[in-house]
Image (cartoon, rainbow, N blue to C red):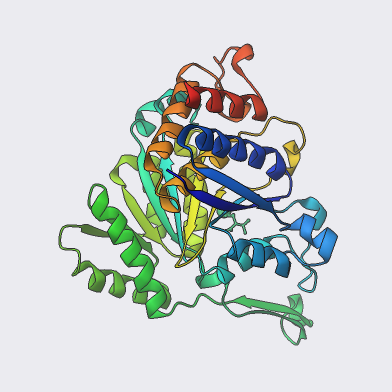
Length: 370
Ligand code: IPM
Ligand code: MG
């Protein structure tokens, strides 16, 4: 096979540069094994982009992403750029901007427990055993992109009738946005166990009522798939009570953000959760976790979510399913042999099995080549 794929790398902030290096290591290992060539370009996003250019998503970054076959992103953000001032740039604007500009409306977050990690979850091993679900999060609508504003000095907004501030965000969805993400989720469900939970807050929110109506209309086109409506508060509870009831879960942007962090605990660590953001053009792959500024530069971050994002890239952008399966098998092998980064270590992990970012990447790469 003679395939050349160009990948745009966006390391971002915090642990980003450390973990993306391990992702590239795995891509290179796949290239050496399969004869596929990966070429790379690197661009700025997030806090580092604000420092160097004044904005979180420079035009050159967007152009490099659009010109690539796939984008691999690590993480953005950090205390240095934290601000509540609406006039100041925020690293997260880079992430939201690239999602919007590339039209990445479908965010897939697989939540799969590697059997060796049952003891790493803060939940009981018998609750998390066999967990394998897929969260399909709508990514370019809802509260993240709705009209928002902050008003100053409005009479009656402050305590005791004094002038104060008022702020609002808007949760808005158009029918086509709801329908296309639901179709994506139904398609995924059809390929898996044919069970789809649609999560909403239809007992309160109008946008959720539209969502629920759409879900039932789209369901008519998928007679083989069972559709289950669930309210988001109940879903948050059910996820930790009985996670195996879920297979594919579809939900709006912010509910998906919150539920996916919660669901990551079923896998042992947020450091295990990868994601693929898909639209109609170039796709983007990134861990679901943040930039972990507290451990940045220490070489201890778990690179597996980044490596699993590479796995998703191989599957969804390049059709290299065999190589993707081999990455999963390699990770399984490394974990089964007892190797752990510290976030997935349990109290009985021998200290000499607790390794850093680079060593974990090396082990996965070596196992892949065996
Ligand atoms: C995620 C992150 C982002 C989000 C932040 C960093 C803007 O939490 O990808 O889940 O809220 O979407
Ligand atoms: Mg999140």
